[in-house]
Amino acid sequence: MQKKVVLFAVCVFALLIQAEVFAQADTVAVDTLRSRYVPTGIRIGFDAIGPIKSSIQDDFSGWEVQADVDFDRYFLAVEYGSWERNFASDLARYANDGRYWRAGIDVNFLRNDPDRNAFTLGARYGRSLFSETMDISREDPVWGTLSDRFSQSDVSSSWLELTAGLRVRIWKVLWMGYTGRFKFGLSTRGNTDMLPHDVPGYGITNKETTWGFNYYLMLRLPVRNAPPPPEKRK
Amino acid sequence: MMRNTFAVFIVLIFVSGACLDEPDCYLLNNSVVGIAFKKLTEPNADSALTVTALGTSDPPLLFWSAEFSENADTAFSRLNLPLHYFQDEIVYLFQEEDTLRFLRLGYKSQAQFVSEDCGERYVLSDLRVLEHNFDSVRLIVDVPSRQSGTIHLQIFR
Image (cartoon, rainbow over all chains, first blue to last red; front, top):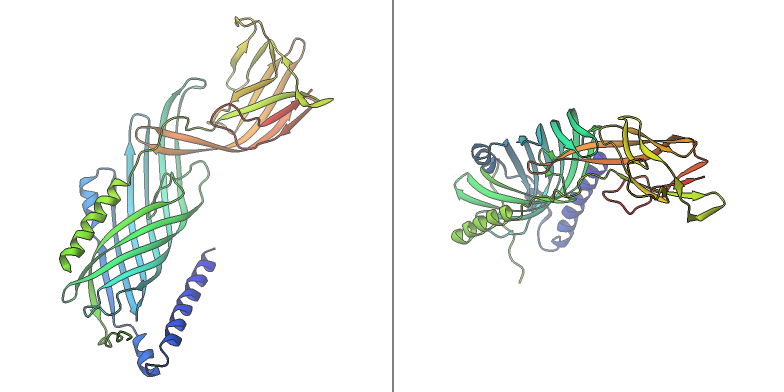
């Protein structure tokens, strides 16, 4: 499954680049085109929501870092993070802890911006490895008092995301931006006695799809001078 | 331009927060199995099983007994019975006038935390007939239900 998704992403990326080359072959020199697909910089950053959420919510602790590199209007994006959840009530106690990563491609639809600000649509493949425990105690009208502890480790989940984002240059190399995520296609392996309640990087699992939001503060490290943006067609 | 961008950031943060909702705590477990009794000679019609007592062996529970029931009708054509979600099998006992019938069912039970308000739920699946001393038992639906209404097993006598 993982290989198929990666292969699919590579094929889509190759087709998008090929279509771009053919569309503009009559007006732009080939050398200029090739140079446009050489990365001009690497952007690295962290999610500002994670630390804020960790400090104000007792049941959450987490962080996330991200990086992307440009290939003309396309960005190869990678995100890595960690999160823990702790829910406790008189009925049950639940805790999980895990790491996750996502990788995918964004396409910029603000091509002519002089500051290289970007509005992007994209896709991600996400994967999470985590452990979880649950302690329960309940009074059942038929079976009486029931209590038990469920625990499982090395549970892995994968999912897909459609993303929309904005990247804005604030000052020199300082950037900020957000990514909204529509998450779907969650599948989990390694679970036996428990079904996951919360998957690190994905979220609550009680519905077929879910939403996510990250607000990033980033630094962009230039590696070469960017070519001028393409001229608007008359 | 920059002011508009900030406005979009703020609006989206509030929208993402407003989309959160709480699950309903009602009928979380799918732990009900429906049984229909039939005769081998008339498989399309329900046939009543006359019992004097009905229960489980582990834990030893008496669900119903003619001795303690005000209802004089001891014939059941359909039954809805609870599955023990802390176990992966259960034995139902049906005491007829002169015969003790049993039905041993296997299933997969998985616990899932729902919320701090609701606690946990149990998702049961892969219902199987392991052993019985009826003439024949046919599995119709292998996923137990949250409430009565679905027939999962047909028991032929």
